[in-house]
Image (tube, rainbow, N blue to C red; front, side, top):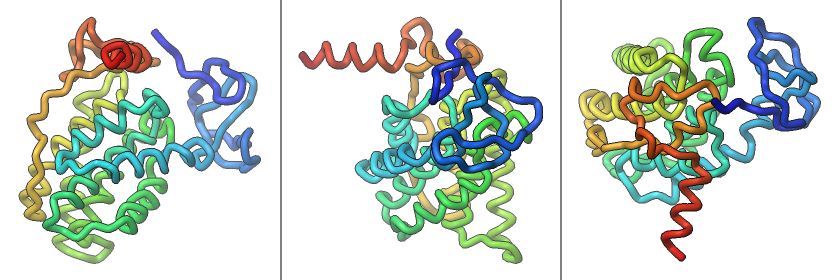
Amino acid sequence: MRTEHCFVCGCELEYLDRTKDLICSVCGAKEPGCIRCPHGHYVCEKCHNREMMHVIEDTALNSSSTNPLEIAETIMALRELPMLGCQHAHAAAAALLVAVMNEGSHHVTHMDIEEVVRRTMRQAVGGYCGLTGVCGVVPALGACFSLLLGSKCGRDPEQRLTMKAVTEFSKVVADLTGPSCCKAYVRSCLSAAIPLLKRHAGISLPGRDTAIECRHSARHPHGCRKARCPYYGGNGGGTLEEENENNASCRS
């Protein structure tokens, strides 16, 4: 089983039972955190996600697909993207909104994507899925539904429909947990989002029945669920590095 390692010194990270005030080793900011290395190194959410956010958004926007699962798989295949982490929440949101943008029935702009990113950052925080029971992918797609439906506090039925969608996403995540896997959550929540968008917003996207064979199982730091995961690729599920090397060999 692989482990997650400190960005600063390479030591195995530890997950705290209680949040503590930690100081970012990159920018010096102080914030409550729950993941650090034994030597006290800590990287804040802003520094941890800064570069990856641009990569995720650019990768999504470069796609012409209307299939959010297809866009998400392209993002999750990036070498820069960690196996786990709240970057996946932003990947899910970007994949869904760019698919809607490409589908064309609803006007979605770059500013809309940036708005959803800002909303997601308020609730998708590394390690908090285990501390609060809320995976960041859930509020990320909730933010997408809120934007597309025009939901905000005091509005009905927009807010009610958004909350019902979020409840569905949360159930989908809970059914796949043990241990957690951000990539599985992205896939399952996007699959659940497609019929909900059709029903509540009249947006028709393909992809719910997209066949996916995960190629990242060997990279899971807490141990892949393997046959208990609907996306498990069996013994063929190697590391991303191995997959890229194989692809490079095929092209040479």
